[in-house]
Each structure stands twice: as structure tokens, then as C-alpha cells.
Length: 283
Ligand SMILES: Nc1ncnc2c1ncn2[C@@H]1O[C@H](COP(=O)(O)OP(=O)(O)O)[C@@H](O)[C@H]1O
Ligand SMILES: [Mg+2]
Image (cartoon, helix red, strand yellow):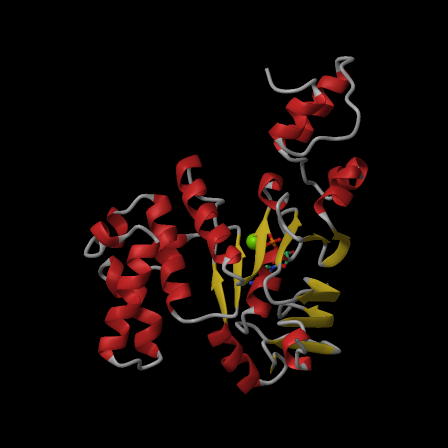
């Protein structure tokens, strides 16, 4: 099978991107490159203030780059006003705090919000909203007021609203940071499912356990790329991880703590299964 160049072109193609906030003395993002292809899951990690949220907003067409050699999202030019407007439709962005994203009186109205803005016919909206409520396990809650929801339910409602509009790329900015462990699992499972269906995902996180499964990890340090490659490569460089103000996945931290106490392991396990294995197999 042959594919046209459009099919193989990255959905996000960013080269030499700069962004500086008005009045700031330094760039929040400087000379950044990022390419994300269809079906990829790219984790963006970095300490507070490293530029992750700025990047998320730029990728979603919500801010204008200060400068870039190239900045395209789903074929739209992010340097052009009409390109950013078009990009906002193809690239869905979910933010950290679900409170700021829920705008309607009840769950189903929130899920419908984006479709109503796009002036979909009411019958199509109804069908799509029902589909989203079912897929995110929100059917029973469809008339619930957002402030009556748990954190995980709020974030699932916000995600359902973002995804209700057919997207090509999903950008998630620390979507689990404000959730309890149960809510975090709910949101992660939903994201994994969407990625499994082939949606390209940019996943911003400071939770290294959430970065382990990514196809690629990009680490930001003061707005520039400090690392790009697979998760194993990043975590193999513990000094770099520490310099970036990050941790290792929980299994890796445990392995290091064991090593400090004289129980050195070969290699650095990044998952609990790998840690068990390194300790001599499952009990
Ligand atoms: N609205 C703003 N005005 C001015 N500076 C900002 C604004 N938002 C963020 N910044 C600055 O830009 C840098 C990157 O911030 P941000 O993208 O929020 O990082 P992160 O999401 O990684 O914590 C930080 O130095 C931050 O202080
Ligand atoms: Mg942020």
C-alpha cells in the first residue's frame, strides 16, 4: 500500500519555536522542535515553569508563537490567525483543572458545548453526546451539575467534551494532577483507550509513571529541550533526571533506594513487574 505525503507528514510539526510572554525578559519557550505523528503518544515532562503549559496552549492554537521556522498543526499554520482558528478544531486540549473547563449547567450540556458552537444539527449532537456519555461512563450522571461531581468525574466530563468534537490530536496538560488516585486511574484509562484507537496524544505530566508507556519523551528545561527519546533513555541518566527536577518511576526510585542499602540490581527497573523480576522473580 502506498501512502500520500499527507498521511506520513507529522500532525504536529514544530521547528525553532519561540514564545515570550508580554513584558517578560526571557523566552518561556526557546528554539523548540517537536514532531508528533498519527497514532503517537508523546510525553512532555519538566519541572514547574519549564514551559509545558505554554507549549500545550501553542499546540492547540490558543496562543500565537512569538517566532518559529515552522509551526503546523494538522496542516494548519499556527503562525497565521486563520490557521490557529482551524487548529483549535483539530487539536483538543484538556487542562489540569477540570473546574475551569466545565461551563454548562449539567454534564450532558457540557459535553454538547463544543458541538453546539460548531452548529451541529441537534439530532447529531444528541447522538454524539450519548455516545460520549456511554464511553466515559457518565450516563447515570448526565443531568448532574458539574460541582456535584468527583474530581475524576469532572475530568472525564471535560475530556468527553473535548473528544465529542472529532479530533486528530489530543493535548493533555497534567490532566491527573488535581485528582485522587481513583480519579487518576479513570482518566488514564480513558486516555489509553483513545490512544489505542489511534489518536495522537501529547501528554504533559510530572508523574514519571505516566510517562513510561509513551512512544517518546520530551523533557523541557527552562523552555528548551533537554532530552528527547524513549523513556528508558531518559531514566538511564539519573543525573539528568535530577537536574530537571524530576523523579524516576516509583519502581526506579525503589530500586535506587535498595541499591543505597546494598541491594544493587542489574539495570534500572521502571515498572513494578520489572522490579520484581530484578529481585528474583514473582513470589
Ligand atoms: N501568563 C503569563 N505571563 C507571564 N509569564 C508567564 C505566564 N504564564 C507562564 N509564564 C512563565 O512562563 C514560564 C513557563 O510557564 P508554564 O508554561 O506555565 O510552565 P509549566 O507548565 O511547565 O509549569 C514560567 O517561567 C512562567 O513563570
Ligand atoms: Mg503547567
